[in-house]
Length: 320
Image (cartoon, rainbow, N blue to C red):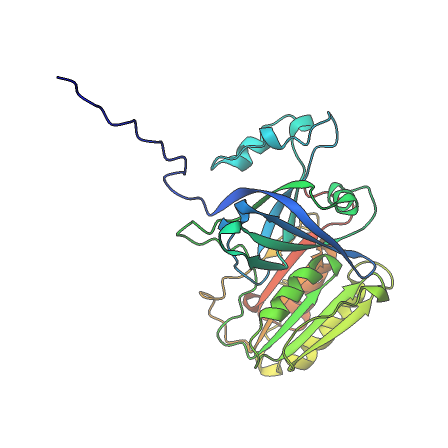
């Protein structure tokens, strides 16, 4: 008797548990200059059909190509669940530079994938991200670590989260955080009220923004060190927007991190017991944000549980 055996089952190449974040293999679709200092890189590819659109200031990692050795290094870049530890263990010459950016927009295109816009700041050719963005052309390859649409858990990596008591919002950003601020403004409900203060290197960097009528946008052209004009303007706005009854100055300034560290203080506003009517989202150069935190918490008495303080970069220091 002949027994016909069924063909072996095709192994399921997907992981048993989908990670919240995964590596996406993409190509540059378009490059569009924005103002004097910004460029919009539109990424596309079938792999992006699984990219989650979380809105607001969703953070992603750009895996930039190696510049030495004649290869971009992408074939050896780790793709497993513990990719970051594997990346850290690589020799320096084989470790692709990583840089954190925020998603400006996501456009899903059915089963063919989607497009993801990333707005980048151009600041010369010294840094790997600015150097790559300056030379980016349609068809160039890039790896992106981003939110996985197939994950059943939480894939959000964003700081924007106004507390339930907030009746007014304040956004403060330098040019590195303008793309995130723009995405946040675009997603605000029509009834939102507040102010956005945006510091830029040049008057040509004023970008067209979509935002509710009740939110006023102030553009500040930098004059001096990064964040100085931004900090003064934010303090001025808080003095106007935050009622005195809601202020509780702290003698310690509410500052736990040393000045040498990059401040990243994002409260869990869902659990924070704050009744503050003002929510603030502040991002920019780390030392400027640290100094601003002191002024707001210590001098003006703003509840630190109602403010996200984020050092997006630090002058003179690379991210990775």
